Length: 158
Length: 290
Image (cartoon, rainbow over all chains, first blue to last red; front, side, top):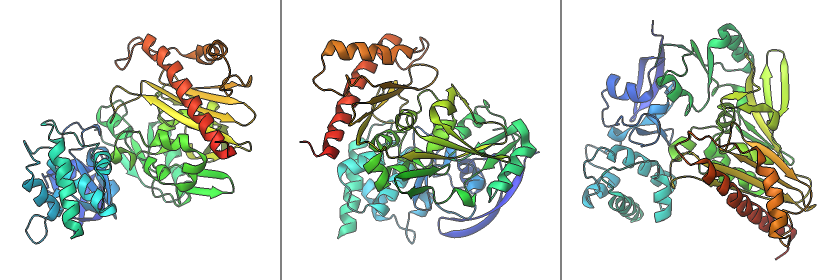
């Protein structure tokens, strides 16, 4: 019998209280229980970054966390980036420079970039490469993805 | 993932009760970057998972007392990389922690977990060995302090016993002036497991310690007290003989996909020379020699 645990967490700015199965990952719960399918399941071993979410300001692989571990924490998934129904500056920059190709990796790329810009609003290209080094893009759109983060950082400074 | 019950003790005492009730069917969860994968792949099928990240005694995760730093079982790679004192006194540990996985992995993976997981390729094992770290293990009957060279046993094996938790790694800055450096070889830059890991420390008395891993069942710690490796003027032949002895325990697997045994053996010598060279440079920096 699957043990369920009652947890309370802030998800994309809303305080939520719900039951999770002890053996479900945060990725499972975001997608299948909360309907937040922006977060992608891919390698499930922490190598591709498609499942990246931000927990208490820190980017993490949601495939490598149990959902119950977010009890009392603040989780942001890609659905939490938009502001008042509009793309935020980072998302807009991704669109403007055509960073998404197939788009599958983009939610994870956005979350890593979002966490980077929160902690370092004026990154160098090397900082971007390091921060997004855990996010693979099989379309190999790395140049445009890096450019988008730099464009968003510049826009943030104005 | 098979079903299990989840326990989140808030004190060590409570944790020992949970561990004792669960016996051998318990897994300890810290960063989870190895455990969650093992449970999903069903290599590990615990009945109980004990999350140690809310145990009060394990915070703060990094504590300095004089010239000794204590990394608790909750200290992540990212926290170690960000600690100023560790950067100053144990730069090779930072060099090892900063290349583990990706940012996302380093934000979760803990140094203690890296050691307890028992991978022969664990990046932080060589620096902790070369710095003579002590692993502090706590159980219901008390605390054991174990030299890390004795704590590491083999692939997936440590001296951690049923009912115990490895609560900390203690590292003391050496009393002699020392330089140190970490080197690793991977197939590509980025998220990859190491084909060879190596850490060297060189002190002002000419003693060199070299710890190396990913070339056998566990990481080994070796010591050169002849002064040959620490002497930049020593002949290549003299150094080769010392390296020959130091690397005698390397027994790389023929089945590994990451690198062939011959390549790994050859690279040990290359990384050894690089790490010792950089350690000597750092020693000269602290000695004020230009």
